[in-house]
Image (cartoon, rainbow, N blue to C red):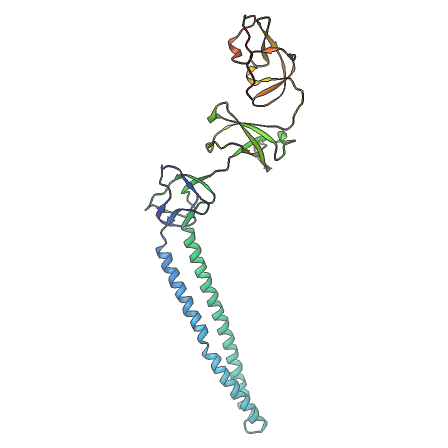
Length: 317
């Protein structure tokens, strides 16, 4: 949150180091003092009202012009009858023309004053509104740097509001973007939650690439009601394709490029070639056959040639 206005804080929704507070879009989070601005607004509205009354009363120049135009008509008739000299008629015509120009200028000035009053009132209302710092979104205010009585300056950071939208920002190398589309499934692990895996969906793709790093961003929407800490780190994998009839094992069964299999009660180290993978499983291209028994839990605790007894663990996924 940044302040657009300037003044002394009268009200704050959350004090520094306070407990985060749920807020709605448009809700006032910080109110700066507006007493002087309100007084200026009242004066501007009064001046506008006075001006409008003057306009309604009318112009003295308009009344004089109306009288002089009637006199000019009378002089025109007398001039035709040779009872008034052409000089007198021309003099009256020039005076009427002068009044017409004066009235036009008066009208322009009044119109300008009307607009100036409107602009001044609009500017003051805008300035007053800037002294109300509102939440731009539905969410939670999680930090504040202002207490009542503090002086707040325009452009200064006064707090932070986070959205309830569970959105994960992911950065990838430019070449890894091939085949990624909105709506694709993804899986996310966050260091805060250990090895727990969250299902997600590609929400949108960034249209730009960072020229310094050659990396591009995409955004994932997480399908979970769990509150995720803002600014956390983790790992994401996106399902770009599905392979049928693949030989797969749990990822935790790997020891580098090897696995431990059990045959006739003895442990044997078997090198494997890995294919596609995700956060849970890996594809084995070579080194295993369907039906091989693989040690899944804590394989690092077993050694080649060790005697073991086998117990099968049911897949819980």
